Length: 149
Image (tube, rainbow, N blue to C red; front, top):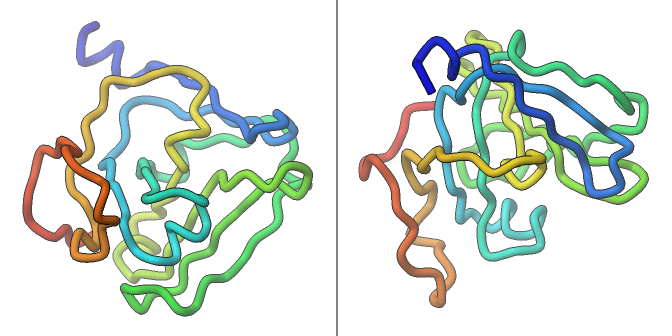
């Protein structure tokens, strides 16, 4: 696939019950694995995988009225993280950070597990690796330093 094709590729995603459906265009700005306690709680898993897009690339095509939001104020970063989830099935779908850079760049975060098809993206970094569950090993990333976004 050419770079031009990748930039315009439209992917679909949804919550578990498919009440909330969205499309996203192109490849993410970044892809992160988060090991913070709140992402573990929110995902019900050992970590959460998040892909970052600008808001103009994300389009909710169905079920926006079924999204509820939890404003997570006790995050490891200190920034409020708005966690959007489906009111029907409870799936985490989107996140939005109050971080000044994220707000200025109009960043929207998608829970990677909600994408309908597999992708070849590799996480850039792991956030809060010191909080990683003891049984989690071998997550491949492209960068080892702590990100600014």
